[in-house]
Amino acid sequence: MSKELKVGILAIVGIAIFVVGFKFLKGSNVFKNDNTYYAIYDNVDGLNSSNPVYVSGYQVGRIADINLIQLGNGMNKALVTYSISDDVKIPRGSSALIYATDLLGAKAVKISYVTNSSYYEDEDTIINGMELGMIEKLGTSITPLLGHLDSLVVGLGSVVDKNNKDNLQNTIANINAVITQLNKDLPGITGGVNTLVNDKNSSLNKTLGNLETFTGNLNQNNAKINHLLTNLDQFSDTLNELQLKQTVANAELAIAQLNTLLAQINTGKGTMGKLVKDEALYNNLQNASSNLNLLLDDFKANPNRYVHLSLLKIDRTVKTKKLQQDIEKANAPK
Image (cartoon, rainbow, N blue to C red; front, top):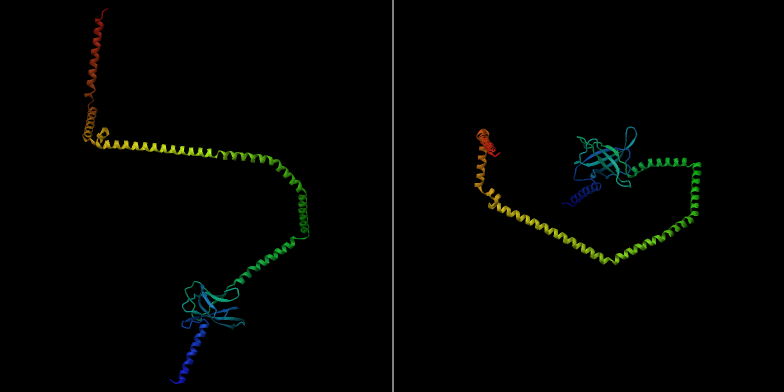
């Protein structure tokens, strides 16, 4: 390979590296395809080439170029060229808003999306827009406030006229007079308060003395009070223990008696046990009940068999007794 060919190849590689590096420094993605969009603005102050373009806070492209153009009506406008990744689809009607990124005036662009089924195509013109920065918003908010403040100052100036000033001075003078009179009367008021305190001081000292005597008596009898409380506590504990023991004993006795009764019943002892265990007794009772039911049914069907004969027998007995009485009366001596 000749020396001239080597120099040519090296020059071509160097130029390619320079172009790639230049585009990289400008923010271009050399190995990825981008779409180009345009937007026209009245003012692009603070906006520079290679400034980022954001969608929802994520960088999707950059500003490729800014040019000044003149429209047909003679007005100058700024044409901003955007280079945005072809992966990002921008719905038609969306706008490119210039906004401030910090307090120093640095600018960037963000895409404000709208809902639309169709999208901008490569080299379409996007709707422009401006978003107020923090300083602009602050200025917009302060302007009405300054107007209200100016109106307030004017109102205060109209209120504080000569008559109001005189009234204000008179009010201050009256307040000073009241304070002066209060300073004059203060020694007398203080003396009266001191006299009242001295009169009540003896009563207060006597009350404090009685309270001290009472606390002293409590301290002297502290041991007795503790002993009394201890005895009372022991007595209540003993009483509780006795009542609990008696209750438990009664419950155990009742349970034992119940167990004995159940055992007798299970073994067939006693009346309840026989009723539960003796099948013959049960059968006899069942037969007696059946016979009694048959007797009652027969009595209902044939009452003459049982009632009529008894009545005739009773009537004959009564007549016999009456006949004997008549005979005895006839044979009785006169």
